[in-house]
Image (cartoon, rainbow over all chains, first blue to last red; front, side, top):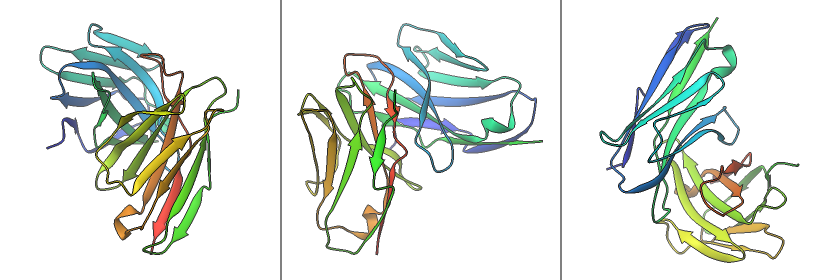
Length: 111
Length: 113
């Protein structure tokens, strides 16, 4: 069973709207949790990194939250743009550094 | 600074052959990690090299191996290729000193026929 579960698997939103992606994990203890954005045909690009003691981290229109008690993280995209169409991957780094990746959420932004 | 580069970008091999992929990290980065990405399994960690030593390893068979050179460039080798090895192979570099960001290359897309 994957230790990092992301939902939804995919979503479609209209340009300018907001959306929230979910990441539930069972990896424990962990060193950090990261969100990556991966455009089609390209390598992932880091959006945010949070240690277990951080609750929120922002990067422009992207805001990640972390609740270590419930083992949940979310990535909120504000005022979506067409360029936000991509796959968003949640990655948890346990203390032994054997990274656990979520399957990703595919976001499609339509004009 | 130049980003992470990977060569070749695309590769077609047949079953039983072997393949070597190359990754050049960002200048100054000492850690290089390799990942396999497939539609069904998502991103999976292969191994990480730091200062020419394998520091961490994922759960892949011994057919997958790698090495890192003194200039931090890294190579990954897959022997006795299987159809299931068809995937996008990504490498990522980082300073290697803690919680810093990993920067990914564009990947090498391998197709095994």
